[in-house]
Image 1: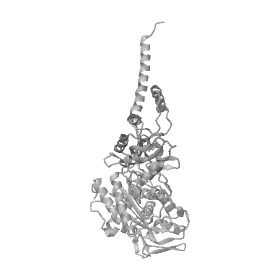
Image 2: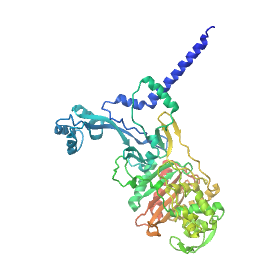
Image 3: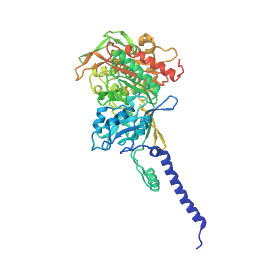
Image 4: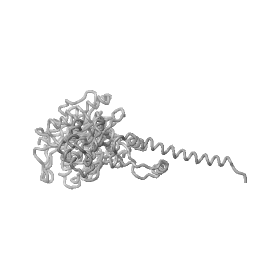
Length: 569
């Protein structure tokens, strides 16, 4: 049998090509994916910590032009420690070292006196100049090690959204916010092992080809840092002036559900938080707390009535100022009747009796169905931890009084994120969006994943959305603070809410405690933004129009200018 050289050459070429592809693949992972880790090994000039350096993925804000800005990252420095067993002339050592760094004298002496110990930590997070100065002393028993820690460049900026990392007993990881929700993506093992190069090549390929664990990477957020900073500034002003606590706000794209800013006051600095702080400051009440929202629910009630065909904007009823249902009395905010009024005036003057009229005209089944369709009793699915459901059990009652009070936002409770999602449907053609704060994940292996979210369901007809928007624009143009907030060149749809706060443990409502809320969207007929603001129990003021109207107006003007939104009228 004659040999076949071309076949053998092709076979040999095939094996060479396969081996080259394997080598290239592994080199890619060594240089690109794991290059940072190996670079740190090569760069390490100091003693290495026993358990490896802290490693964690980064979190980035996204600016309006699409560039990214670090929101949570790693900072490098040095750990200073001693070996008491071989350290001599302790007082003299302290004098030399204290000229370079500041540390507690008595504590140092106490640690240095433990002559049976070989390792005592003295100071963390030293800079390179300090480390070089200590090294230059060449003191036996004094050592340095590289260390890393979590660092938040914006300090308090979006701290309630980002969260923090901390120990919980012996476990270290994300504890609040995105740090917790995406801990599996952000967390790193941090341990470095050394293996034979060729064994490493093939084992690496195997890991890549057959990996089943979660990929690790960095988060890119929808949060815009300048918008976030402006919102936080306005909330701080409201808190300082009126004392409400908490005071919070959300700015969102009502079409996509992308959250541009989300903030709560008081907040915290994750770089310098204390474990002794009240743990409630780390939670996010915009996601984790429910409130009776008051009159900002009236537009939802009105939209439901319009969509069901129970009313039109010109529908009228006789307002006596109060209603008695099932033996209970409900009234307008001032107890006064207006006579024959239209549905538009119900919104303009925020009449409780008018909202109740709409709900009762819809019927005991249809009105609750609409409120459920708006998602008031369910979670939104936002990518943040601890989200709570709304509480709308009163809508299941056959008593008219429960449905009447629900129509103007009392007796039912929901979180701010549930509320803004429901209100978004008024603005965007009738669709419930999916609120979210993560835009993209950049994985360590060199690929990126654009996050996809549920496009949302249609809850009212597009024409209903247009009608309720037109009604809310008139509220701003003619009624809100007597029309003084009307913008000449921009249409704005908005509504205030003032709700009584229920007594703890039940038994009615406080006479002197209120929750103020405000929502609006702009430009009204093709909105880029929906804004929600609230403050709990502001001092010395009754109505939300007094506390939140001007902050809303300031935020609206800022967004128009910052994003260069063209006029729409």
